[in-house]
Length: 262
Length: 69
Image (cartoon, rainbow over all chains, first blue to last red; front, side, top):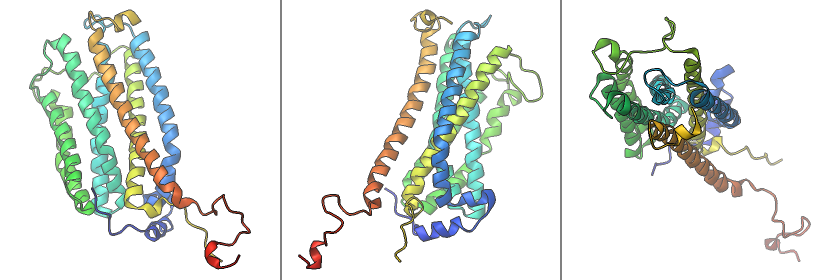
């Protein structure tokens, strides 16, 4: 159970709401809460549409691979999940930095809201990779640099979640979690560049910003549709979770203001 | 890819079903838990937002504590 934070007050939230201008004003929980509520249905709808399109293109339209057969279709969700696992960790680290530097409560809440989804995608990366690896490599798991560093990423996510749950002091949990996140950021470039730095069983990148993809266009399309679906899904569930955190930590930001007595 | 190949226990069907099925199941579980939590939260908040008088009494009726008949 969490101890109610000492700064929890509706008047503070309303004062924050009137303090900033432009996009910065959405750092106020009182303004961000309804905005998140309006965005969630649209993000969820877009995620469902992109996901359905990705499934159709990936499972129906794309032809079997000449070498791997049908099992290569796992890569459409494996690569998308792997990208999201690293991307969400970097976004969490960015929110951790903002929270530590500017002491913005919403940054810490966003950092915390993203963690379960990041852990989910990291687990899915390892799970789908194992299911692809067994028929392709002949092994569910190898202690390869790419796989091992991705497993460490899962432990970082789980460690962050455990640290948040370990203490009743919300502010200490936020700051401790933020420092853990920033210390673990070094693992993300290790994951990404591991296939270049070391001789690994895991193959190199098939899609790069600087070179043409080494895959057929229809396969790239299926993969990018899944990336878009996972990105939109992550945004929707993170906003839904941060609304819960705002309601828990700053209930004054959630309640509509009561009409003043004459 | 045909439905028969996807749902077959031969070949790569089980690997594909295991990957896509677990992905869909875990995402659905996360969405369901968030939806249930949001529903519980809105249910807890609703009684505090009612400022209108109880429907069983008319607006002209004075409260019982006022002493008026």
